Length: 373
Image 1 (tube, rainbow, N blue to C red):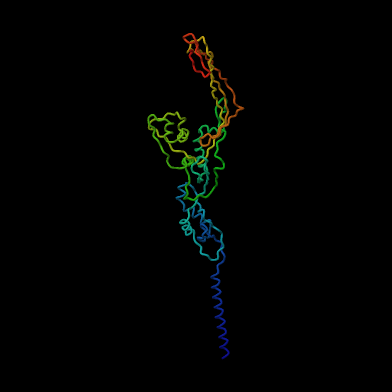
Image 2 (cartoon, helix red, strand yellow):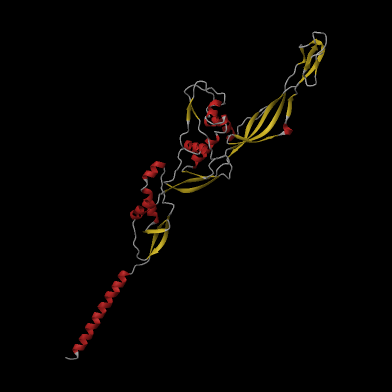
C-alpha cells in the first residue's frame, strides 16, 4: 500500500506538469503574430499610421473631395505632396482604417490636383524681378492665354495669318511677320501635383490679364470727356500712345475717334512674359528734291521764275525689325536690297536782282541781300 502512494504522486505531478506546459505553449502561440504586408503612411517625413491598402486609402481620399472636384471641374483628387506611403512588413502593429488616416491628413496638409506648373523668369523690362509661378489644370488654358497676351503686341488678324502660314506676299511695299515667340529660357513647364490651397488659373482671359499686367486686380478706367484725344489721355496717365493702344486694342490707331462717356483703360502694363516679334518690312521713303537758285540782272528785284519744277524721289528700303513687348529693340537695313524707284528732280529757280534805280542788288555768298550804295 505504501508503494502505491509514491506512484500516484508521481503520476499527478507529471499530469500537472503537462497541463502547465500545454497552457504556456498555447499562450505563446496565441501571442505570436505572423508577418503581414501592410503600408506605412508618412506625412512630411513623420509616421502617422499603418493601413492595409494603399489603393483603398487613395480612393477614400479621392471620394471625399467633392468640393474640390466641383470647383475645378475635375474627376480625381490626389493625396498631399508630402504624403508618402511605403510597403511595410508588420508584426502585430495596430492597423488604422482609411477614415482615421484621412482625418489626420486633412488636418495637416492640403490635397492635390494633377495639372501643369509654369515658372516664368522676369523679363528685362519687368519691374518685379521675382520668378512667377503659374498653375493650371488644362495646358490649353496657358497656351491660349499666352496667345491673347501676344495679340496685345501684334495685330490679331496678322498674327492669325502668320500662325496659319497664309500671309500675303509682298509685291511692292508692306510687311510680314517672320517670327513671334517668348524666349525659350524664360518659361519652364512641368506636369505636377498642385496643392488645392495654391492659386490655380482656370480662365484664360484672367491669366492673359495677369501675363500682361502682372496682377489680376481690376485696372484703372477713365471716362472720355469732350475734346479728349488718345494721345492726350495717354500723356495724362503716364502712358505712351503705343501702350494705350495695347491696353485698348479696339482702337486701330492713335487718331481713332473718341466720344464723351466712353470708358477706356489707363492701367500701366507690366508684362511678366517677353513677347518678341520679328518682321520683314519693305517701305518707300521720300527723297526730298533740292532747289537750285540763280540770279538774273534783267529781272526786277523780287520777281521769281521757276525754270524747272522739282519733284521728290522715292527709295525702297528693306529692313528687319525686332520688337519686345511692343518696343522697337533692333532694326537692320538690307542695303543690298535698297532700290531707287524714282530719282528726285531738282527745282531750278531764277530770282531777279535788278533794282528800281537801275542798279542791281548784290547777293552775298550766304544768300543775304545787299543793296548797292
